[in-house]
Length: 159
Image (cartoon, rainbow, N blue to C red; front, side, top):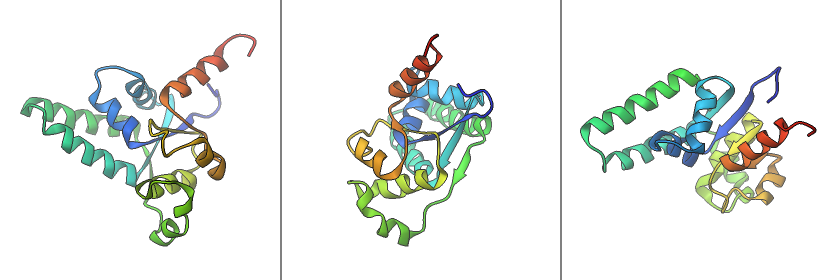
């Protein structure tokens, strides 16, 4: 990884939610990098709101104890990571930039990423956050697996 500056990771709601509700996996590994402050967590308000809705839906299937644990884990993650918060983009900008991505609900998230200029946007939503979207916006968009593969390749001797 970059020695002088921490990589700034903009996490889509599916990566953040996946990391919170999974026992293990690459989503949780991304959150661990942010919690250890190896990477800087960039959190859009639009993503935060989506995650909180996802957690409420997920909690409906859990015991009271598990709901409390999930809420504690989420609060602890925010405390540990001290995320760089990105406000909602202005609604006029959202309307003007609707053409950037196929799914209208993703426009505020995409614009939050464009505005914050992260090193990486991590998402599992490859149906909407496509290579064409990456080219149009200049963002480096990848799944957590692609992100870790790139990191591992960069760390190999002779690369």
